[in-house]
Image (cartoon, rainbow, N blue to C red; front, side, top):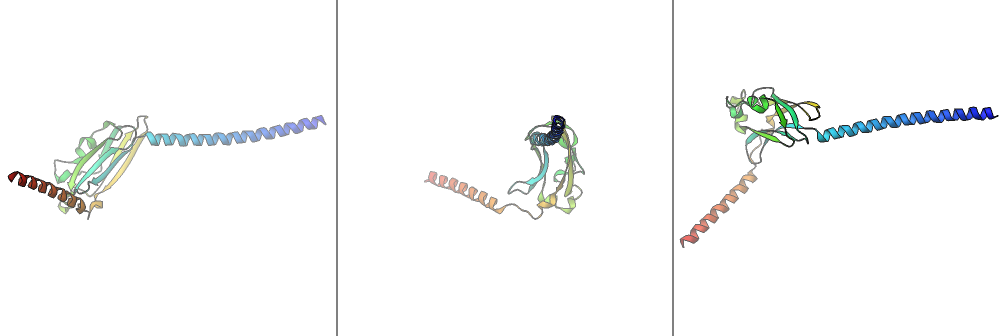
Length: 196
């Protein structure tokens, strides 16, 4: 009878050990997954993010291009390449592709830094005569790395057609004109009072 108890307890112990091994393996796998998620989240929160976007300031017909690092670390060995020439303001000697930021490697592009390039006034950009000098669609390839050595390669498609049929905000102009009118009236009042 003691042999049967001994065999039974050995079998039970073997089953319990097997269950423990399976549960430990699953817990280890879950921990590895959780650690990978944490590492990925840490990298995403600390990596550089080079963003290229066209924009126009409110109330202005001037189209600009912004290159910025929205990340929390420097972009190392940043290289920006245009897929075609873009002549700022349609001028042959103002090729954006030849600007230092687009033609040379930048060793250190600080976090939250930005460069702004003036491109063209909207009527110049959309003038069919300038189509070969100011293309309405282009792309920028950005390659760079993080301080930890992680490499990134991102292409940004730029379509200036989104600015078609947009205009200067008349409310902004009206507000500026009202301010100028008040200033001129104030000067007039001051002149009248000194002449009396």
